[in-house]
Image (tube, rainbow, N blue to C red):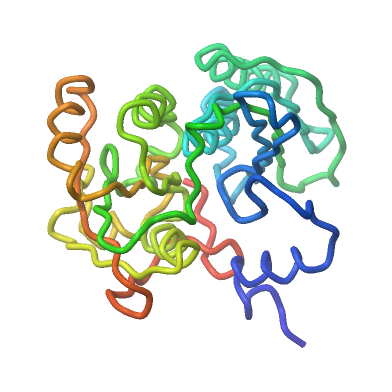
Length: 304
């Protein structure tokens, strides 16, 4: 009998999507950073929907500061809105907790969630609490709505052969605690979609080795990356930059003719955040492969 470890996360998602009804005319169906809903064709805005969960011992350790855990739980969702060119709005929070969980821990968790919502102009709309058996892992699940201007939405499936590949910030080092202390790139992607709209975009959550192939495959393309160009956090090797995951930086593609101008204007507008050209989109079947990255059913949880 096949198990989830046998097939991996991406294959599981593909199989599950085929088992349920889907929107016959989606603005963007399952498989992107957010679902895109076109509720009113006359409106300049589209609705974004996102859900995400983090699990104790997988995404964080019990020793982690609960306020930082709360920030991470909400910021992961905000990062996905940013990756679509949008902004977050209403959040629903579901907590699955053991009865012996200290009240102070839960309150600080919510303070961290509140810190994130306040920073990015979102609000709590509701939620749920439920019990897990004594000794079981805490689960924090978040669903949220957002919006994006119709002309600004960017998918991961629209890269073109010859496009330049860029990443914001630096990669690697999540195991040293970066995964609990990151800033979603909402301000940066709002500027990008307005002034230099990418041809494709997503955030890096499972590592460049997983997420760049996803973008290329969704676009029907291949890719080439020069590991020597990767912007790395201190003490990280190129392989860690490719594989560690939970960078929550933005990966995007753009026409090569616009790359130099983009770099110059980015440096002027965002001098404190690196922007690095790391490769090129190729025809399907050409390019290279990357190894590593995070797969929920094959990787070993470390939860640092």
